[in-house]
Length: 64
Image 1 (tube, rainbow, N blue to C red):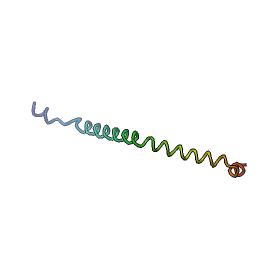
Image 2: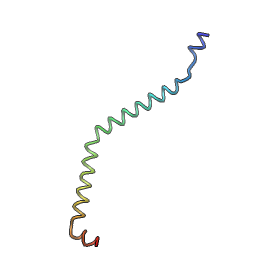
Image 3: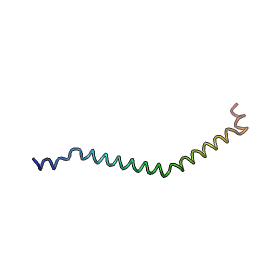
Image 4: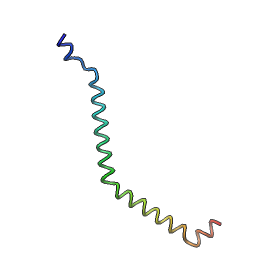
C-alpha cells in the first residue's frame, strides 16, 4: 500500500504546467520592464509625427 502511494503521480503534470506558465510569466514581465521605455518612446515619436502631419496646411486642406 505504501509503495502504491509513492508511485502515485497524479497531479505531477499539472504542477509541471504550472511551473512552466509561471516561468513564462516571469520572462514576459522582465521583457516588458526592460523594453517598456523603448516601446513608449517609439509610440510617442509616432504620435508626434502624426500630430505634425495633421497640423500642416496641406493636410488640413486635403481633409476638407
